[in-house]
Structures are given as structure tokens and as C-alpha cells.
Image (cartoon, rainbow, N blue to C red; front, side, top):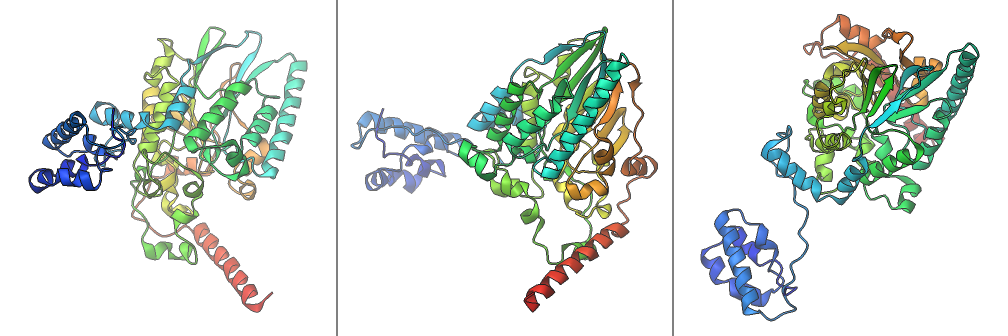
Amino acid sequence: AAPRKPQLVAIALSRGGGGERDRSLHRSIRRRPRLLGLGLGRGRGAMARLRALALAAALVLLQIPGEGLRLPRPRAPRLPGWLRGRFRGGGRAGAQLAAVLERADTFVAAREAMAAAPRDLVVPDDMELRVSALSDIHCDHPHNLEWLRATTAELLMRQRSEELRGRRCHDVLLLAGDVSSSLVTTRKVIETLQKAYATIVIATGNHDLWCVGKEDQDTGVVDSFDKFRRVVQLCDGLGVDVRPVRISHRGDYYPIVPVQSWYHGNWDREPDLPQDVTAPLYEDLPAFERRWSDFRFCRWPDNIVTREEFTSLESEPVLAEAFGSLTQAACGGRKLASIHEGRKPKVSFSLSHFIPKRELCPEKRFLVEPLLPKVVGSDVLERQLRELKPDIHVFGHSHIPYDMSISGIRYVQWPLGYPREQSRQCHRTAKSGPLCLFASDEGVRSPQTTYWGDYYINNKRDFTETSLAPWVLDYAHARQRRIDDIKRRASSGG
């Protein structure tokens, strides 16, 4: 093996090669011996690569003076531009994406952490099976952590009261992400919930994968895939499910599949609002890319997605495909529906943090942040749900309660949200706690009345109307008044 310094020379050949480049090559090596090696795989054509390889072999045989010819470890391949936005699984694109992911160490470690068989759970016949849903509990806020403790204590009292009346339940909680950005807090949350829930199934959210704070620095978190792996290991250690669970109860089969996911900007294909319409919302505000916290607190292997690509509002589904493959790894590397192994579910459940269908996000004119659809949904997630065909899918992320059926699947979002939202759109969750979806002695519970679920049951999406909703204008004007007050106090020195 051989000269360390000849490291990049073949690059001259690989970028066009021939003619004067070939004739001057020997002089280049003498002047800059560091130029030999990387070019072995960087050619744009077959002949360029062949010339580079032939030259490198000749140089080895001629024993060019130097420190020997040691080939460097190849860099992780960049995802080709043609692949972005065109990958839909399988074929040449699938093979190239798989090759890119294989070279990202933190992703490979996360996938290995997820690679385990679905868990089989048998609920005793003398107990009832009960399944509830909750999302976006954000227990980094002390108020939310106290709410969780109080709600769990209340649920525990109700369970004991039921037991006195002869009704024992195996309670299952579907927790659709955004638990906490701190692993220490996540542990506290899980240990609290386990007092009332025999089984907890989690789909991670974006806040769960933030690389932020002294805790992550001290523990050496590398990036968000590494953070995901640590969340998986924490859940495994505490007996919480992040992989499919196959529940058997009184001869019936109830599968639960957590679908790990991520969003991409070009999921949003609905027209943006005109700039003159949104101007009142964005006055005195930095660009959305600077305000969206994920763009500051999430980090990814650069060979999978660069920072510029991740923070683009037209980002491609590269991360979405990566998380889709993590879910697939939890299903033995096969299609998600293969976990059933021929059994027919009585009621099937799935959960994700992000939104699988555009119908589950209000139109932009109704949102106080009209750019929100750029960072909420995933085509990959929708594709996996079409394959899985659950009866009920639980999701989160937008903090907008939903309970509606689309194409035979019931979609439910039941968020706690931030403390300020618990007197607004999330007030029912704050008041009543997790939503019960199913009980084996009662069947599937009736859908809840939610504002946006009911609105879109009765109204079609209308993109010809671009005027902001009255409450959006009220929000913009109230925010502007607060900003003006701050400016006045600052200018007066008060």
C-alpha cells in the first residue's frame, strides 16, 4: 500500500481528462504530491475513471517516492440531485438512497436500535383492553409536567374505583410525540405514565430529537439520529414500545404500529397566500426559516442532508424516507403490513407525530402561521399508512384537535399543547386528559366533535379565497400592538 501524499491527482482526469491534462499530469504529481487518490471514484465518465485507475496503478508499480500510497477512507457519498424529490422507494433511486444512508454512522446505529421483532402481548381474559390517545405534551414546560402528574393520579383513582366494582382494565396509551427534548425529563414522564398505563407506545416527534442544552453536550449527542437512538434505548430500558405491538385478547387481534416519521417542505402543494395578504402577519418579524426552532436545534449527517437543504421550505423527502426505513426496520425490514402474518385485526391502530394527509391541516388563510404546512407533513408517511390500512391513526404536531375519517381511516389528534394553548384550542385535552378510543367491552368510541374535523366534513377546501380569517387578523393586530408597546417603552427608557 502506498504514498500518503498522492491523494487527489486523479481528480484532474476525472473532470474531463485527456489532452494537456494527461501530458501535464506527471509534472502535477511532482509539484503537488498531495493530489493523487480521491480521483479514483470521482470521474464523470467511464473513460475518465479508467484513466484515473490506470494511472494510479502505474504510479504504485513505479513506486513514486513519498510516504507510500495509502488510500484515504472514502467520504460518505452525497445524495444525487436527480434523486431528491423523485425517490418513491425501490429501483435505482432506492438503491442509491440506501447506499447514502449506509454511510451515515448515526443513522445506521439508529436503524440497528430499531431492528427487533414486533412484541407479542397477551391480555388476560379477565381484564378489559382499553386504548387511549394523547400527543404533544411538551413536558419541558413545568406546567405541563405538573398537569401530567395530576392527570395520571386522577386516572389511577378512577382505575381503583373500577376495580372495586369488578372491572379491571389493561390500559394502553398511544403517545404521538413531542414528549420532551430532555432525556431526563422523558424518563420522568414515562415513569409517571406507567403508574396508570400498562402499555405505552410512542412515535417520536421533532422536539424529542432536538440537540440542545447542557445535557446533550455532556452526554455527547452527535446529531438528531443519535438522539433518536438514545430515545429508543431509553424506551427499551423502561419497557415502552417504539416498535409494533401485536395484542391478543380473548381470541381477537389488535395490532399497534408506531410509524416514525419526519416532514418535508414539498409535501405542501397547495398555493401560498399572496404576499400583500400575509404582510400584516410578518411585519417586524424575521423570516420563517429563522423562527422555526427545528432549523436551529436539529442536526443531521451532512451527507444525507445539508443544513441549506434541511432549512429549505421546499425540502425533499430525504429525511422522511430515512425515518420510513427506521419504521420498516422495526417490521423486520419488510412491508409494514407483513407484521400481521395472515391474521385479521379486529381493530388496528397506528400512530405518528407528523401529519399524513393535507386534509388534516387547515387551509393557510385559517392559520396564524400560513407557512406551517411546509413543516408538518410527509408523503412517505401517507404511503406507509396506505399500505398498513389501520382503522384508527393517531397523530400530532400541529396542536390542532382533529377527529375525522378519510377513505376508511379515522384520524385523531388530541394534543395538550403549550400552556398558552390550553385555554384555547387544546382546552378539552387540558380539562379531560387522554382520549379513550376503544374499550373491548364497549367497542370503538364515537368520534369527538372538533372544530376543524367538523368543518372539513361539511366544507371543501377553497383555494380561490385568500383573505385571512378574522381571528388571524386579530392575532396579527394584537401582536403588532405588543411590539409597538415594547418599542415605546424602549424609546422612553422605561
